[in-house]
Length: 448
Ligand code: MV4
Image (cartoon, rainbow, N blue to C red):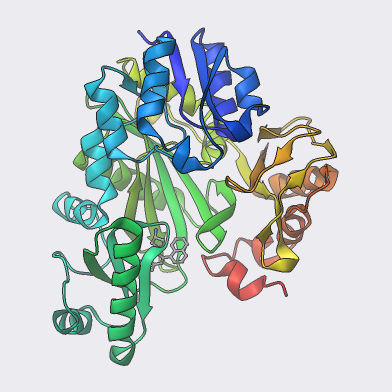
């Protein structure tokens, strides 16, 4: 049984995990960098251990230090949160070798799903629809050109170890192929130390729809419905909601069944996300599987009533899922806005500094997941997300009204934020009508 959890993360997700553990009667250990000595997660955990300087490479990404901190504190499990080491199969494997429970899937599943080309082939074998593309690695321009022609243009060249937009280039036609291929390959080599590439047909203006799944260690797998994450910029999501306005009950059931099939094909355990691209026609394709808890998990928590962090801990503890698919019901509508320390007028450049004063909203159907406080210093070392504002109401329109009202109450002084920008999106006629896709911000909502 897990009695003490070390949280290998910082910020709001570390606080979120500490709260879940405390409610479950589990002791917590925070790790922190020198820049986070006064951070909320450092203060809220039962114990806190400094693991190095501010730079992530010297602290939150230092596997040996985190394992040592776990041993010294006597923690029996590590929750990796998101980002940092959360999808690092070597770290999960190190935990396995040290007899530390990694709260997440096995290192083998993380490794396989981390290779997007292997993931793709796994899904093809399981009968999960994937985007038309290559089954084998594409190594040279000549064979790439031949394959791209068969796939039909436009095509997208992707790094096997990519995801999140790195090592990826679109070629609209044959003339663009060589440059796109070579650029993507170079980028992949520099970013991942591996330039294994694959090619897919490029799906234009799709929605990004992802399904939350939970799987225990005994072959039971359920999905908790979808999140529409189409409102994003440069692969950074800004607004997420559940359910998606684009899914009929029939399509939800169909995509949900495919998501469960995908998770089972991957031998998945714990909480995961199956990402799809969805066309206007209702055609959908598997894109990637994320093997971590995600930033936007609260919208799913609110429409299902399931605490996903507690579910992760129970699964890691060897408990069986307490529900079957037919027990999962989606109630109402939830929307999340990410509040970032950035200036939308200046190309969203990060805005570090001290929060001199602040007020965050509350009330029925309003949730804040955050680690900021008055006097907190936003440093330039980490992600610029300050808070997640999540609302829940009976209908999408009511949720939109609640989000507008809540955004209107937010006061964060001393630094720039995207709160006013979010407020404007919540009033855009296409957002309100639900006519959104992954190009929304770029095409309809450009600043400057
Ligand atoms: C695609 C695509 C269109 N067609 N693949 C973006 C990051 C990585 N997860 C894969 N991505 C995409 N893959 C094909 N075949 C469009 C994207 C994409 C995207 C996907 C979801 C959300 C936002 C996006 C923004 C740009 C491109």
